[in-house]
Image (cartoon, rainbow, N blue to C red; front, side, top):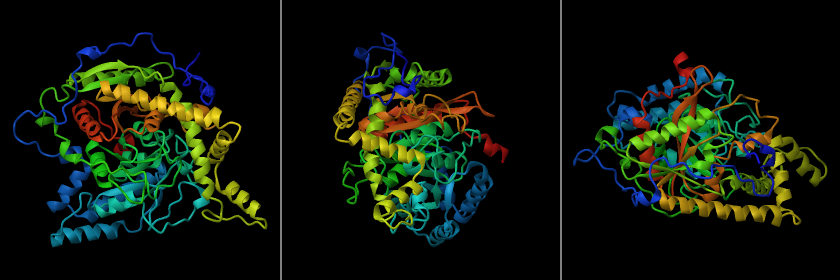
Length: 551
């Protein structure tokens, strides 16, 4: 039987659809019996002296802060530079649905604080984009849907509020697939965002606008949301760092709900250090979100050590498992080569790399789409033209509801609402929704077992690099199949980090490929430490899109 990646029309069957894989796992290094028991919580440094925090060369955010504190640069000059780049690149990239009118005013306030000697927040003067499904009190928040066109919330999402409290300047609202439902950002109700590496290709989705904005350096970092890979897949396509935290690590208050048990607020940066700084700002318990965790938030940034201060084998003792089901049929050869090269590089840094099998891996994709669509059909019932959304003109209440939703929702949203309603109906609940929840438990257990034997797991973030705009518009199941690398992580509720690791042929300068690192619950710190070492030691790669060099 062909794999779901090759035969995507099978993915919504409620039967088991195993992906073929070799009978014997290929051993990359040693057997489990010879693995170290655990990865040390603190990295071994090359000297007894304490190591400094990440340098400005490895972090745009730290560079901004150092420039402001040393008074080499003013916040207004930095803001003007970003806005100028945004204006030059936006006609081609189309990352933003709305750009704030207050950027320069807020930058002036940062300069005033510097001049008066006031304490600056960790994100002072840093321009950050926000995905348009996160509420902002001073800008429209549409969720990428025409039904919310012009809607202005009366509050900020908790993640946005925390950014502002840390001193960040929200530069604008980024484009997305409508309500987060899509993998290309072609599903936006307003415009199609392009990939900065090749304007004829998609940036990924649904957080494609946030990923493209960071890739094109229109902002220093951005927020996205990840329900089934919507931060990690665009990060891979656009050659930036994308972080999906543990479910509950970041408050969902103010995030427009798609699938409440899967939705997570994540972030993008041009480096792991930038992602760590943003996560530190937005993580933590929130009384306004019942699913928000009270788990302690560590100082992620202090654990990121510059490579010069580390031992020759900085990852010595780290146990890494390569998910073998992610390197089989249906995955582009160039992507497999990049991931295998990344695994080899991690070995050279001292880690022990073996292959690990997750037998339930292929079941996650159909289970995810049943669960996500079911939750979406419930969550989106509020957009009826009365409670929320543009109201159609009708004399009868039922027609008002129907016409408002028919006019306001796009095709993909309507399709997922119908799928979810069908799966939850009385005659099919056990066959679809209940079985999908059972599969979710299997996925969770398989990750728990694998992560007791490994410190992190790795895989591609997507089966291919960015594909052409319109290539999968008429074949939604093929587009859904592209999420197979990421959806299992959301079902398990665990964290994952994507870092650029190589290129495949395509476009003017090649197309980036992302390495996905998966960790245990609330262990973002290990992912960030490993990712920081990996990106610093990766030689001969420069993830700057040709769009910028042309400018």
